[in-house]
Structures are given as structure tokens and as C-alpha cells.
Length: 258
Image (cartoon, rainbow, N blue to C red; front, side):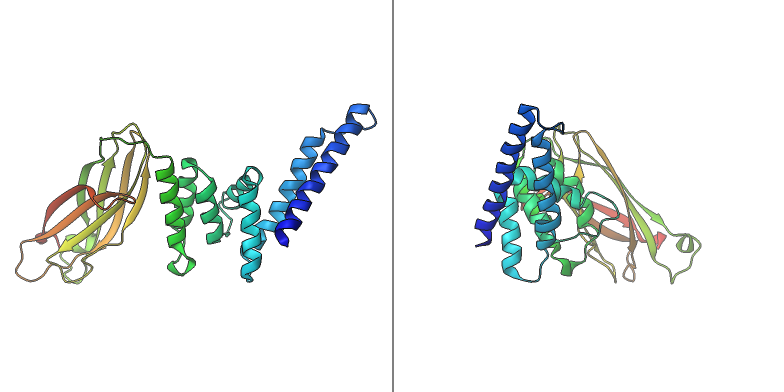
């Protein structure tokens, strides 16, 4: 029923558009082109009716709103993008991410990635990640040139450097370069061995543009096991959506710094 109402709503706007064109062409009205008026009305409908309905508590309302965006993507997609574009926006509806993943293109990935990093797990963050993966592979351009690990180092905290054995907070710094002529959506996994705490660090996701350089600093807590001279770190780079890693580097970090 709501789908028919949507079509009637659009049809009514089309009739209004034709009527306005006729009046404008005849010289009866001195107003902006009717097409602009029509687009403003459609945009208003998506912004004030269908967009808020995406987060409605009633499943049937959410379905109706999604149907509207899928039926008229040329008008709905810009509204979806604008809803999460402003930095102060708190619109983290997973339905928005899913629709952008279905209707958008690779240019939407950076904004989705920025928003996704601010989410908690209970906010269906996996939907945002799935949307980015879908956009990435929908517009994928293959390249045999893989990312390279330019540098990897540990910056020991001041207390550790001064010999405070109770402190084990440090910073892990690494740089990844993408020499390929295409962007890469990657995930980075890091795992320590021969430590007593925090052996596996949280997975990080990045979009590195063609020819781009990524510089990242991660806080880590490393406490080596007794009687070991070094801590092992396995550093892996994966392309999102691929089971085989692109790069695997094993690094030995002297335990004398901790």
C-alpha cells in the first residue's frame, strides 16, 4: 500500500511539473524553471519523510523507506550522502550505510570508513564494513602491485626508558606505501608472541590512494615473558574481502627496551 502511495506522490509531482512548465512557457508566471521546483519537492520528501523513517521502530516503516530510496536512487542517494557528510552529524543508521553500499560508488568509501570508526559494535558496524567492501569490489580495478611496509618501529614510553619496570606502554609506528596505480582497501593485523598481555591487537582498516603513503601510530602494551631476549611481531596486510594476505612480515623486537 505504501509503495503505491509513493508512486502516487511522485506522479503528482510530475503532474505539477508539467503544469508549471505550461504556465511558464505561456508567460503567465515569472518563476524559476519548474524542474528545479520539482526537484526541491522530491528532495524535501526524501529528507523529511523517508530518511527519518529508515530508523523507525516499526519494520514495515523501515522497509517502505528503503523501497523509496531503491526505487528512485537519483534523488535518494544524494540525501543519504548528505546525511552523514557533516562532521557534527550523529546519524549512524546502519540502513543508510547499507543503501549507500548498494547505490553508491568507490568515492563513498572514505566517508563510510570515517563514520564506521566511530561506531560501537552494538551499532551494527559489520553492515558499514560490508557496505565498504561491496563498493570496493563493485568498482575494483585489479593490479599485481601490492602495498609495501616502508617502516616499522617501537617508540618506548618515557617511564620505560627510565627503567620503570611497572610501565609497559609504548607506541608502534608503521608506514605503508601503495605503489599501485589504484586505491587499496586494506586491513592490518598485528600479533605479538612471547608476551604476557595483549598478544593480538585490534584489526585496523585503511583506504590508501594510488601512490599514497599511510603513517600510523598505535599505542601498545608489551610485557615480555621471563627469560626472553626478544618479542616477536607478526605484521600482515590483507585486501578487504580476500582470505590470502598480501604481505607478511615477522619482526623481532628486543625485550631490553621494556
